[in-house]
Image (cartoon, rainbow, N blue to C red):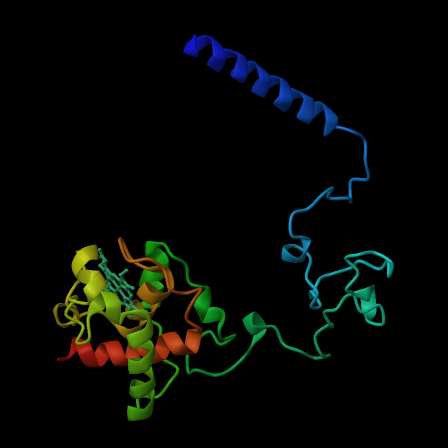
Length: 209
Ligand code: HEC
């Protein structure tokens, strides 16, 4: 008896789902999202940089139509230089600089990285900044003094003691931060180039303990 009633309940459920699908298949404007639950979650009231809804009567209108391309985002100021085309002399050759950061994740990139020179002159101020950044991005694994005994490192396992890695060049450390190494994940997307170099200076002080 129980079995039969469950069975018919199942049939009803299947029929309702099928009916729902059929009813939901009407032809409609492909730009119309249909009924939305909590639309304010999807449609920003604040200006979205790439919004291009130009119909001022639309519910979703939030473009600045006075701007070029009717986008909220403005074009970069004339003569703006892309970071990747930035030229500065870090006493490295060849010198279309920051180009040097195009080294790759693979081993040839790592070998080239060994030749990288820290563009920031060594100073207590830089080391101090590096220490703060290290506390933010590395310490939980590598530990306060770089022994690999941070609270996460203890659980994560396999975090080396920097003092056992005295042969690692500054370029190699920079490469490790940028791309990660074996079980350590990359931090290149989270830490800016110059901040990475600051951290390198601090890690070197831990290496030499
Ligand atoms: C999630 C934990 C974790 C975080 C966060 C982390 N590391 Fe590591 N790190 C590791 C592990 C694990 C290794 C060992 C990798 C291996 O197996 O060779 C390692 C290795 C290293 C090495 C040695 C690489 C070599 O040449 O053998 C350096 C240098 C290093 N990390 C620097 C950093 C710096 C600087 C940061 C912060 C920007 C950082 N790590 C953040 C886990 C971490």
